[in-house]
Length: 287
Image: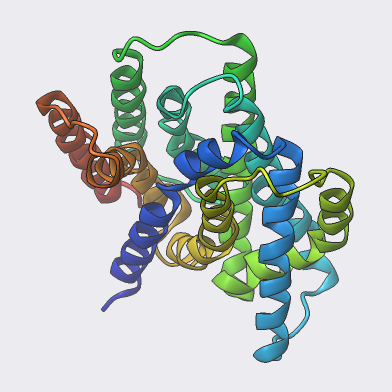
């Protein structure tokens, strides 16, 4: 298997895992404070990451790597989880699809700025078209506007795109799972302190769905998904593999249909096929 194909496979697995992040956050934030949810998920993942680094006796990052790790931590450990958790207090998971559809484009832009990639002009055409299809589909569902929620989601997309690109660049030398692990460990002292500060008075009233949502975002969204995602971006290219995120909202629809019994219309399927074609086109012209 060549490096590019391996990158797309790893990226695809990462996207599938991330597809459950916003629904799980939506469920968890219904009973947990957004700041507590952000900090406790990072703290749980950070403790596990520290254990992995010690178990495999990984070498410490260099001083030059620390700045990049701080950017990753601010983008994907703190920024995106906190901003989306706050946004989901104002908007629905469906509404957030509008902004998740812009994430591949943000990742590609930062891939050029931070990763030194130079996709062909046709790549940007497919990338913008794919983002427009996803955003247009979500807006066609009759979404209600929330200035606060929309601003928070837009900020989340920007910091997440930066975190993805920075982490992918660092993964080329440090390794995929090592990058997210060191970023989590770097954040661990602050996350533990903040989690204690914002902890709920009692967990007695917290229901099982909220606890399961917390478990998912802590283990899968915060750690396991990034193992595959950063490896995929490093192998297949930040801009190219990043376009797989266009499929994330539709994987979410599939999860809703399978687990929650929600209906999937022919329109959803048609847009999904069109987005897949855009991803294929973007891959062809990525380099």
